[in-house]
Each structure stands twice: as structure tokens, then as C-alpha cells.
Length: 354
Image 1 (cartoon, one colour):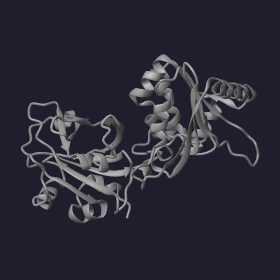
Image 2 (tube, one colour; image 1 turned 60 degrees about the vertical axis):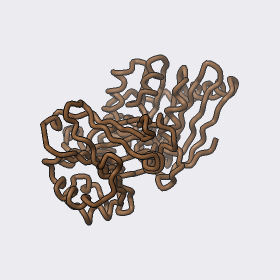
Image 3 (cartoon, rainbow, N blue to C red; image 1 turned 120 degrees about the vertical axis):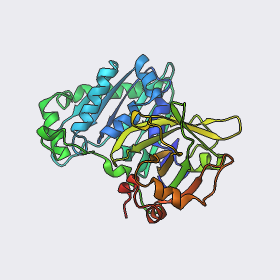
Image 4 (cartoon, helix red, strand yellow; image 1 turned 45 degrees about the horizontal axis):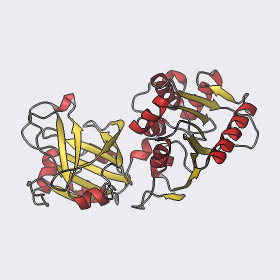
């Protein structure tokens, strides 16, 4: 099956989603990608579907080191290697003149048959969700998957001199060069290898929702109508679909990647829940706001704005006459440019490219 990934295309199928669907029922698998980032690793491996697969099966990942792949990539893979003993990650280092290591595929063996996910995105946040890419997901019979497995083993055997452990000094040196940082500066605060992925433009779709004060609850609950769930959040009447988010904290820093599902409520709405963090537990009079920016299908930047945080009073003043749901809570659709004009104090606007 041929697929197109395009952040502007509402019906786009994402490579990230295709890989997770392919590994769901697999016994084992392997793959290799030219460029790999820490965010790309998290998008694949920080997911319940991958966790269930790697708990019962095995996966061998070989990462290219020519460009992009860096120290943060190695750190992420080592972290998952400790968490998942069945995960093996190696690096490919070559010295072939005028040549680039450039493959992008994974294959998965099932009890009978298997699946091939081939091209064109790398194992990066851009390649998995935000770039315009094309890829093929091919269901394979037993003979076909065994043929692919044989070719994989032959290639790995013939490439023994190029395939190195993540701890190899040459791998660490190349990763440091790719990051543009010396190893001693690894802990530089605020540096992110794919920070640009989590930026948006003036035309990017924005949804603002007022949410009930949590009071005695341990979670924020946000309900949205069917059109918002289906089209803005990209669920298409399939609430089991996961969405990927990255939170902008009050100080403007990006937090870890999150995956969430939205459930149907009895009154035919979609519901999303957020765990209340320690710094949000204080009793504050007033309902918080959530601001979502759509970066690609089912891919969002978001922030939760509490009544005592910068931008809250300005936001409430600007939205007081905007549409409300049946419970009287504000529900407002806009774009990045209009948000900047109306409310210029929000931390999430630090990621607006003009």
C-alpha cells in the first residue's frame, strides 16, 4: 500500500503510525535508518504498542551516522536498551568516498508472513510526522518475509566491519561532531536536536479550550465536540487513534513527548485528560486554558495556562465574548498569527516562526 505523509493533508497517514501498526502483532523485526534523532526514537519507542511488542519479541535497529544522528540519539537508545533487553541498537560507520548511508525501512515477522515499511522518512520527528514523505507498507507472505530476513542477515554479516556498538569511541566522536558540540558540552541546557520541528507559522491552526478547575480531581478533563475531535485533532470518528503532543511549560521550555487517546463520552463528545503536575496543584481561583497548535495530523504543541501565569488575564479578556460549549466553557478556533496579535504574552508563542 502506497502512502503519502503531508502535514497539510488532513487524511495523511503518518510513517510513525504505520511503524507502530506494523509491529503490533510481530514476533520480531529489524530496521535501519540513515538519520535518527532522540525525538524520533521517543516517537517510536515511548509508546504502548512498541512496548508490548518489544516485551515479547526482538528488534534490531541499525542507525546511520553520516549526519543528524547525535549524542542525544545515542543517549535515548541506551535508555531504551536498558529498559528493553530485547532491543538491540547498533551504529553504521563507513569510510566509502562519495557515498552516503541512506536506507529507511523496517521489516516485521509475524507468526505467519510479515510486513515491510519502506521509505522515505528517517527516524526523526520530521521524517516520522512533519515532513512531506512517501512510503510503502507491504503485507508479505511467508516466503517473502523469509527472503527479506535472509537478505538482511546477509547484509549484516557482510557489513561486520561497519556495524559498531553505540559505546564505540568512533561512534561517540561522530555523534558529537554531528551535534556540533564537544562531548564535554553534552549537558548544555536547552539544546534540542530537533527543536525546529516543534515550531509553527501564522497560518497554523490553533484551538483554545477553557477547562474546569480540577478542585478535588487529580486530572484536568477537556471535552470537545465531534467536529473538533474529527477534524482539528484528526480522529475521524476513531477515538482509539493516538495523538502526539509536546508541552510548552510556563517558562517556555519544551517537555517530553506525550501520546494520548481521546475517548467518547456518553453525550457524544471527545474527552482528553491531563495529569495535574505538582506545580499545578495549588488552589487557584479560576479555570485554566489549554492552547493547542496543530503541527501535522495528530501532532500538536500545547500549553496549559493557569490563572496566575503570564498571559492568562490577557487571554481571558480577549476571549470573553467568544463561543462557549453547553457547559459555558470557551471553545475558540484561530491561527498562530491571530493568536500573536490578540495575546502576545503566551510562552507558546516563543515557537511561532514569522
